[in-house]
Image 1: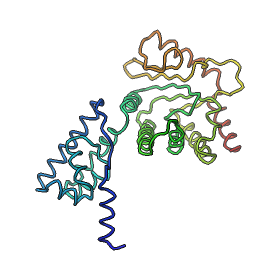
Image 2: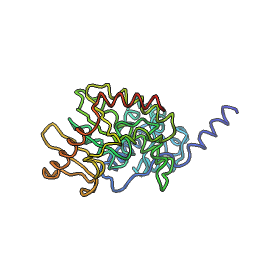
Image 3: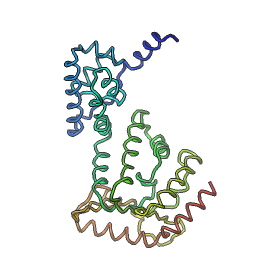
Image 4: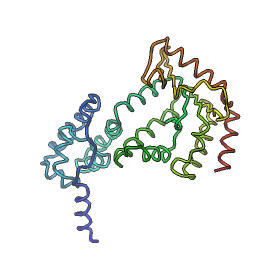
Length: 292
Protein backbone atom coordinates (compact mmCIF):
# COMPACT_ATOMS: atom_id res chain seq x y z
CA UNK A 1 0.00 0.00 0.00
CA UNK A 2 1.36 3.45 -0.91
CA UNK A 3 1.98 6.11 1.72
CA UNK A 4 -0.84 8.22 0.23
CA UNK A 5 -3.35 5.34 0.35
CA UNK A 6 -2.24 4.44 3.85
CA UNK A 7 -2.84 8.02 4.93
CA UNK A 8 -6.34 7.97 3.46
CA UNK A 9 -7.05 4.65 5.19
CA UNK A 10 -5.88 6.02 8.53
CA UNK A 11 -8.06 9.11 8.18
CA UNK A 12 -11.01 6.95 7.21
CA UNK A 13 -10.50 4.83 10.33
CA UNK A 14 -10.21 7.88 12.58
CA UNK A 15 -13.05 9.82 10.97
CA UNK A 16 -15.69 7.98 12.99
CA UNK A 17 -16.91 8.72 16.48
CA UNK A 18 -13.53 8.23 18.12
CA UNK A 19 -13.65 8.98 21.83
CA UNK A 20 -16.21 8.46 24.57
CA UNK A 21 -19.61 9.88 25.41
CA UNK A 22 -19.87 12.41 28.20
CA UNK A 23 -22.18 11.52 31.09
CA UNK A 24 -24.37 14.66 31.47
CA UNK A 25 -25.01 13.79 35.14
CA UNK A 26 -21.28 13.74 35.92
CA UNK A 27 -20.67 17.41 36.75
CA UNK A 28 -16.95 17.00 37.50
CA UNK A 29 -16.32 14.99 34.35
CA UNK A 30 -18.28 17.44 32.20
CA UNK A 31 -16.26 20.36 33.61
CA UNK A 32 -12.94 18.69 32.74
CA UNK A 33 -14.00 17.77 29.20
CA UNK A 34 -15.42 21.24 28.54
CA UNK A 35 -12.21 22.88 29.79
CA UNK A 36 -10.09 20.66 27.52
CA UNK A 37 -12.37 21.46 24.58
CA UNK A 38 -11.99 25.20 25.16
CA UNK A 39 -8.21 24.88 25.34
CA UNK A 40 -8.10 22.90 22.10
CA UNK A 41 -10.22 25.50 20.34
CA UNK A 42 -7.98 28.33 21.59
CA UNK A 43 -4.86 26.50 20.39
CA UNK A 44 -6.47 25.82 16.99
CA UNK A 45 -7.58 29.42 16.53
CA UNK A 46 -4.18 30.73 17.63
CA UNK A 47 -2.63 28.54 14.93
CA UNK A 48 -4.97 30.10 12.36
CA UNK A 49 -6.57 26.77 11.46
CA UNK A 50 -10.21 26.24 10.59
CA UNK A 51 -11.95 23.15 12.03
CA UNK A 52 -11.88 21.37 8.65
CA UNK A 53 -8.15 22.07 8.23
CA UNK A 54 -7.38 20.91 11.74
CA UNK A 55 -9.48 17.76 11.31
CA UNK A 56 -7.61 16.86 8.13
CA UNK A 57 -4.25 17.53 9.78
CA UNK A 58 -4.93 15.32 12.81
CA UNK A 59 -6.63 12.62 10.72
CA UNK A 60 -10.04 12.71 12.40
CA UNK A 61 -13.50 13.78 11.29
CA UNK A 62 -14.53 17.44 11.36
CA UNK A 63 -17.71 16.55 13.24
CA UNK A 64 -15.62 14.96 16.00
CA UNK A 65 -13.50 18.11 16.29
CA UNK A 66 -16.64 20.22 16.80
CA UNK A 67 -17.94 17.80 19.45
CA UNK A 68 -14.65 17.73 21.37
CA UNK A 69 -14.29 21.51 21.31
CA UNK A 70 -17.76 22.05 22.77
CA UNK A 71 -17.24 19.37 25.43
CA UNK A 72 -19.69 16.84 24.01
CA UNK A 73 -17.12 14.11 23.39
CA UNK A 74 -14.18 12.85 25.47
CA UNK A 75 -11.07 12.75 23.23
CA UNK A 76 -8.85 9.70 23.13
CA UNK A 77 -5.21 10.07 24.25
CA UNK A 78 -3.94 9.63 20.69
CA UNK A 79 -6.15 12.51 19.53
CA UNK A 80 -4.57 14.80 22.13
CA UNK A 81 -1.07 13.69 21.15
CA UNK A 82 -1.76 14.32 17.46
CA UNK A 83 -3.32 17.71 18.25
CA UNK A 84 -0.26 18.62 20.29
CA UNK A 85 2.00 17.88 17.34
CA UNK A 86 -0.15 19.65 14.74
CA UNK A 87 -0.64 22.77 16.86
CA UNK A 88 2.93 22.88 18.14
CA UNK A 89 1.81 22.91 21.77
CA UNK A 90 5.10 21.52 23.06
CA UNK A 91 3.45 18.89 25.26
CA UNK A 92 0.85 21.19 26.85
CA UNK A 93 -2.08 19.46 25.15
CA UNK A 94 -0.67 15.97 25.68
CA UNK A 95 -0.30 16.82 29.38
CA UNK A 96 -4.11 16.82 29.66
CA UNK A 97 -4.26 13.12 28.82
CA UNK A 98 -4.46 11.87 32.43
CA UNK A 99 -7.28 14.19 33.49
CA UNK A 100 -9.22 13.40 30.33
CA UNK A 101 -8.63 9.66 30.71
CA UNK A 102 -10.03 9.70 34.22
CA UNK A 103 -13.09 11.61 33.02
CA UNK A 104 -14.04 8.64 30.85
CA UNK A 105 -14.27 6.36 33.88
CA UNK A 106 -17.70 5.95 35.51
CA UNK A 107 -18.40 8.50 38.23
CA UNK A 108 -18.85 5.86 40.93
CA UNK A 109 -15.46 4.34 40.07
CA UNK A 110 -13.73 7.74 40.25
CA UNK A 111 -15.33 8.39 43.63
CA UNK A 112 -14.10 5.00 44.89
CA UNK A 113 -10.60 5.68 43.57
CA UNK A 114 -10.61 9.07 45.32
CA UNK A 115 -11.49 7.45 48.65
CA UNK A 116 -8.80 4.79 48.16
CA UNK A 117 -6.25 7.49 47.37
CA UNK A 118 -7.05 9.24 50.67
CA UNK A 119 -7.27 6.13 52.86
CA UNK A 120 -4.50 5.26 55.31
CA UNK A 121 -6.00 1.84 55.98
CA UNK A 122 -8.24 -0.47 53.95
CA UNK A 123 -9.63 -3.78 55.17
CA UNK A 124 -11.79 -5.89 52.87
CA UNK A 125 -13.44 -9.30 52.65
CA UNK A 126 -14.36 -10.77 49.25
CA UNK A 127 -16.40 -13.85 48.53
CA UNK A 128 -17.44 -13.54 44.86
CA UNK A 129 -14.29 -12.34 43.07
CA UNK A 130 -10.88 -11.07 43.99
CA UNK A 131 -10.87 -7.50 45.28
CA UNK A 132 -10.36 -4.98 42.48
CA UNK A 133 -7.05 -3.81 43.94
CA UNK A 134 -5.71 -7.38 43.74
CA UNK A 135 -6.75 -8.13 40.16
CA UNK A 136 -4.40 -8.30 37.21
CA UNK A 137 -5.49 -6.47 34.07
CA UNK A 138 -6.30 -9.68 32.20
CA UNK A 139 -8.25 -11.12 35.15
CA UNK A 140 -10.29 -7.91 35.38
CA UNK A 141 -10.97 -8.00 31.64
CA UNK A 142 -12.08 -11.64 31.89
CA UNK A 143 -14.53 -10.71 34.65
CA UNK A 144 -16.07 -7.87 32.65
CA UNK A 145 -16.27 -10.03 29.52
CA UNK A 146 -18.38 -12.56 31.41
CA UNK A 147 -20.88 -10.04 32.67
CA UNK A 148 -24.51 -10.62 31.62
CA UNK A 149 -26.11 -8.73 29.96
CA UNK A 150 -22.89 -8.28 28.02
CA UNK A 151 -20.89 -5.05 27.96
CA UNK A 152 -19.84 -3.51 24.66
CA UNK A 153 -16.11 -3.93 24.05
CA UNK A 154 -15.52 -0.19 24.45
CA UNK A 155 -17.23 -0.28 27.85
CA UNK A 156 -15.08 -3.26 28.89
CA UNK A 157 -11.90 -1.37 28.04
CA UNK A 158 -13.17 1.68 29.91
CA UNK A 159 -13.89 -0.36 33.05
CA UNK A 160 -10.60 -2.27 32.85
CA UNK A 161 -8.69 1.00 32.50
CA UNK A 162 -10.43 2.42 35.55
CA UNK A 163 -9.64 -0.67 37.62
CA UNK A 164 -5.98 -0.76 36.61
CA UNK A 165 -5.62 2.95 37.33
CA UNK A 166 -6.61 2.27 40.95
CA UNK A 167 -3.52 0.07 41.35
CA UNK A 168 -1.43 3.21 41.79
CA UNK A 169 -2.32 2.86 45.48
CA UNK A 170 0.58 0.38 45.79
CA UNK A 171 3.01 3.10 44.72
CA UNK A 172 1.95 5.62 47.35
CA UNK A 173 4.52 6.92 49.84
CA UNK A 174 3.89 6.42 52.68
CA UNK A 175 2.02 3.26 51.77
CA UNK A 176 -1.45 2.68 53.24
CA UNK A 177 -2.09 -0.46 55.27
CA UNK A 178 -4.03 -2.92 53.09
CA UNK A 179 -5.66 -6.08 54.41
CA UNK A 180 -7.65 -8.53 52.28
CA UNK A 181 -9.48 -11.73 53.19
CA UNK A 182 -10.56 -13.78 50.18
CA UNK A 183 -12.72 -16.87 50.00
CA UNK A 184 -10.79 -19.90 48.79
CA UNK A 185 -13.01 -20.22 45.71
CA UNK A 186 -11.88 -16.82 44.42
CA UNK A 187 -8.35 -18.21 44.13
CA UNK A 188 -9.45 -21.39 42.41
CA UNK A 189 -12.12 -20.38 39.90
CA UNK A 190 -10.31 -20.14 36.51
CA UNK A 191 -11.85 -16.90 35.29
CA UNK A 192 -10.47 -16.37 31.79
CA UNK A 193 -8.76 -19.77 31.74
CA UNK A 194 -6.02 -21.52 33.68
CA UNK A 195 -3.18 -19.32 32.43
CA UNK A 196 -5.03 -16.17 33.49
CA UNK A 197 -5.58 -17.72 36.91
CA UNK A 198 -1.95 -18.80 37.11
CA UNK A 199 -0.66 -15.28 36.40
CA UNK A 200 -3.20 -13.92 38.89
CA UNK A 201 -1.90 -16.23 41.61
CA UNK A 202 1.68 -15.19 40.82
CA UNK A 203 0.57 -11.57 41.16
CA UNK A 204 -0.98 -12.31 44.57
CA UNK A 205 2.30 -13.82 45.72
CA UNK A 206 4.16 -10.65 44.74
CA UNK A 207 1.63 -8.41 46.47
CA UNK A 208 1.68 -10.61 49.56
CA UNK A 209 5.41 -9.92 49.92
CA UNK A 210 4.83 -6.18 50.31
CA UNK A 211 5.20 -4.98 53.90
CA UNK A 212 2.04 -2.86 53.64
CA UNK A 213 -0.16 -5.68 52.29
CA UNK A 214 -1.69 -8.65 54.09
CA UNK A 215 -3.65 -11.28 52.19
CA UNK A 216 -5.55 -14.05 53.95
CA UNK A 217 -7.58 -16.96 52.60
CA UNK A 218 -10.81 -18.15 54.18
CA UNK A 219 -10.82 -21.94 53.62
CA UNK A 220 -14.04 -23.38 52.24
CA UNK A 221 -13.98 -26.05 54.97
CA UNK A 222 -14.44 -23.48 57.78
CA UNK A 223 -17.69 -24.28 59.59
CA UNK A 224 -17.62 -21.06 61.65
CA UNK A 225 -17.78 -18.01 59.40
CA UNK A 226 -18.69 -14.41 60.22
CA UNK A 227 -18.90 -13.32 56.59
CA UNK A 228 -22.04 -15.12 55.48
CA UNK A 229 -23.72 -11.76 54.85
CA UNK A 230 -21.47 -11.11 51.87
CA UNK A 231 -18.64 -8.77 50.93
CA UNK A 232 -17.57 -5.91 53.19
CA UNK A 233 -14.92 -3.22 53.37
CA UNK A 234 -13.75 -0.45 55.69
CA UNK A 235 -11.58 2.50 54.66
CA UNK A 236 -10.01 4.69 57.35
CA UNK A 237 -8.58 8.17 56.81
CA UNK A 238 -5.90 10.31 58.42
CA UNK A 239 -8.41 12.55 60.20
CA UNK A 240 -9.90 9.59 62.09
CA UNK A 241 -13.00 9.28 59.91
CA UNK A 242 -13.99 6.09 58.11
CA UNK A 243 -16.33 4.77 55.41
CA UNK A 244 -17.63 1.22 55.23
CA UNK A 245 -19.82 -0.90 53.01
CA UNK A 246 -21.38 -4.29 53.50
CA UNK A 247 -23.76 -6.52 51.56
CA UNK A 248 -26.82 -7.90 53.27
CA UNK A 249 -28.76 -5.56 55.50
CA UNK A 250 -26.59 -2.57 54.57
CA UNK A 251 -27.15 -2.98 50.84
CA UNK A 252 -23.48 -2.39 49.92
CA UNK A 253 -23.94 1.39 50.06
CA UNK A 254 -21.28 3.69 51.61
CA UNK A 255 -21.78 4.08 55.38
CA UNK A 256 -20.20 6.57 57.77
CA UNK A 257 -22.52 6.12 60.76
CA UNK A 258 -20.32 4.97 63.72
CA UNK A 259 -22.96 2.46 64.80
CA UNK A 260 -22.92 0.75 61.41
CA UNK A 261 -19.15 0.98 61.11
CA UNK A 262 -18.74 -0.84 64.45
CA UNK A 263 -20.79 -3.75 63.12
CA UNK A 264 -18.74 -3.99 59.92
CA UNK A 265 -15.41 -3.67 61.77
CA UNK A 266 -16.48 -6.36 64.25
CA UNK A 267 -17.29 -8.77 61.43
CA UNK A 268 -14.08 -7.97 59.55
CA UNK A 269 -12.06 -8.60 62.71
CA UNK A 270 -13.69 -11.97 63.33
CA UNK A 271 -13.23 -12.97 59.67
CA UNK A 272 -9.51 -12.18 59.86
CA UNK A 273 -9.23 -14.33 62.99
CA UNK A 274 -11.05 -17.23 61.30
CA UNK A 275 -9.00 -17.11 58.07
CA UNK A 276 -5.53 -18.47 57.42
CA UNK A 277 -2.69 -16.23 58.58
CA UNK A 278 -0.84 -14.18 55.90
CA UNK A 279 2.09 -16.63 56.04
CA UNK A 280 -0.20 -19.66 55.77
CA UNK A 281 -1.97 -17.91 52.90
CA UNK A 282 1.24 -17.44 50.90
CA UNK A 283 1.90 -21.16 51.29
CA UNK A 284 -1.69 -21.88 50.22
CA UNK A 285 -1.29 -19.71 47.09
CA UNK A 286 1.99 -21.45 46.20
CA UNK A 287 0.23 -24.81 46.52
CA UNK A 288 -2.71 -23.62 44.39
CA UNK A 289 -0.25 -22.33 41.81
CA UNK A 290 1.42 -25.70 41.65
CA UNK A 291 -1.96 -27.35 41.07
CA UNK A 292 -2.93 -24.95 38.27
